[in-house]
Length: 208
Image (cartoon, rainbow, N blue to C red; front, side, top):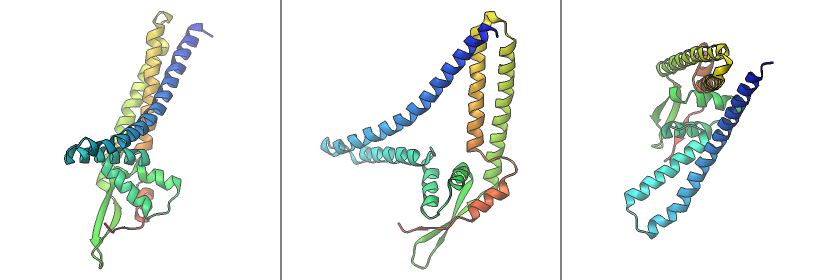
């Protein structure tokens, strides 16, 4: 075995370990930010901050908690996801599938006899198809980039070992992007099954 490729492997494994450490650290940073805002909150009144400043801090805390709880960055979509979870007993598989479809779910509200609103969850086919196409295009681009970088790196002479290692690392980063896209975008051929899952959800009764 060429000793140069052992060096490349050491670069790749080091980069992968760094990426995993960063992901874990990012989650810890989110929790730390929540703790910091919670510690700051009691000081707001003590130093007589203005009401709009306190409101902004409350909003930031809420958004961080929503993201930490659901894994969905958009606060509105995270709130919708919690509505679904609050009125449905669903499996982990269904929960992950619903989270993947969060960008494609609409709410249809109707007034009840008691004056509250009852919300039905609907899978928007137009949004679904748009999200599906976006995922397919991103995967295709990343696959092309992966093969181009990977096989180009293999053909480089040993004098270009650092460049080859960098290209292999970038190709692995593209694989990560592909896996993330598959996890967050609907794929072709599953619309009927996804619609069945959303249609089977219980209605959410808004009693606020």
